[in-house]
Structures are given as C-alpha cells and as structure tokens.
Length: 186
Image (cartoon, rainbow, N blue to C red; front, top):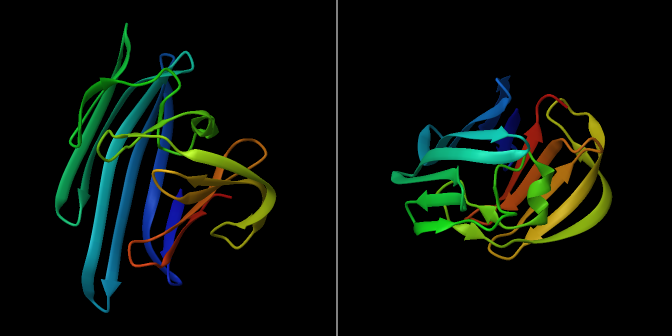
C-alpha cells in the first residue's frame, strides 16, 4: 500500500490488507525496510501483525518486530475491563478507553493515546491540524489532503484524504534523513 523512501531511494514497503468475515474487520500489517550502503544492508526492520475490529471497537492486536536484530512484540485483547495490553517493553496494563493501536490507517487514532505496535508502550501524542495541503502519491499524482503534525513521545506528519483515507506519513530517521511514505494506490 505504501512505498517507503529515504534520500530519493525506495527502502521498503508498508502493506495493509483489509478483509471482513462474520462481522469482523481484520487488518494484516507487514512493514519491510532494508537500508543499503551499496550492496551491504546497514539497517533492516520487519514488523508483522494483525488488528481485528468488531462493532466499531478494536478487540485484538498482535505484532512481532525485528529491528536490526532486536526482537519486540506486543499483544492487546479486549476483556470486560477494557483492552489489556502486553508487550516486550511494558508490564501488562489496561489501555485508556480511547487508546488505539498506532497503525495510522484509522484517522480516529488522532483523538487519543496510541498503543505502540512494536512493544506495547502507551504513547501520548500531541496532534496539531495544519489544514488543507497537497500530497504526492507513488504514481506521481498530487492529492488534496488534511495535514497533521504529531509531537510528544515522537514526531511525525500524517496526511489523510477528505474521505479519511491515510495518504502519507513523514518523519526524521535516526540519522537525520527524511523518511516518507508514498501511497501506491492513490
């Protein structure tokens, strides 16, 4: 769904596959990043996960991540007391009622805390709406979008179309380079 770019080179993909069965929306997530210096891989990142929704509520999320050889995971399941989150970098906790997994496809996530897909940490982003903007997608088209700046626990920018579809994302990498997501299917 997205090509990931750094220094005018495609370094990876972020795929989201949606399916509906028996009233359950499932979102399969696959992120692959491989930064090369010539033929040598200097950084790699892989995240695989699943997110499930029913009746407008997330009820299950599970991911595994390999970030340059460091393994992380998280899992969240809905119980009567709320969404119970476990992760490699947190003790088990009950997420606030308005917390959502930071998968970015659902613009509603801008309204509350985020659950980090990599390790389960609860994030408290500050979101500022920057207004109408134009954003380029992978095929070169320019689309009208709503632009948001996210700060706080991390910094990134998000663009959503006027039908609430996720169009782009940008952030600064560890080395100071700009990382940009370009949507493939416009």
